[in-house]
Length: 204
Image 1: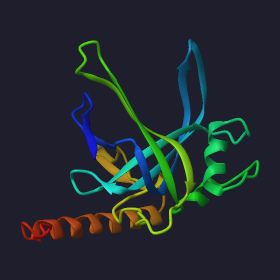
Image 2: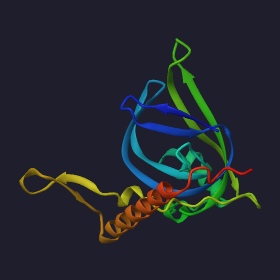
Image 3: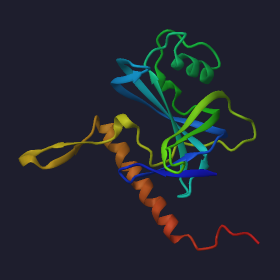
């Protein structure tokens, strides 16, 4: 089961409830230098985000996902070190290419953390946090990265082109090809959904 929340911009994000899931690591995103403030102390440091897709679907039929955000630091006392160690089943080397983790399937222990406003109704904070990672469970369906998923680094960037017209650019020819294949996969999935007979999932 999951809960739907809406951002101020109106975009709807669906998050998993607390529980144990199988997750496949789909992306490692370089967030660059990020400024954060914690307990009155402001820091600017490099950060990354790790994206997992789960063996659970949302109300739209698509796989739910969760994200982990870390300082880009593999010091043995860092949160990133602890998570990578759990994924690998052992201590990572001082320097490690996190892209090697993409495609790894693990058991994720997720805790849903929701904070309400003073009215007791309005949601002001809503997070699905990965609290622990262990080896994948035998006999449990293994999730896969959605066919239409495009890694953050491969997604097109919009910039001003000739005469100020907006154009999309890609980081590499491979990224452009991946975008085309993802769009084709998404279109095919949409056609299959539209042609699916009503009541096909109902068993008597």
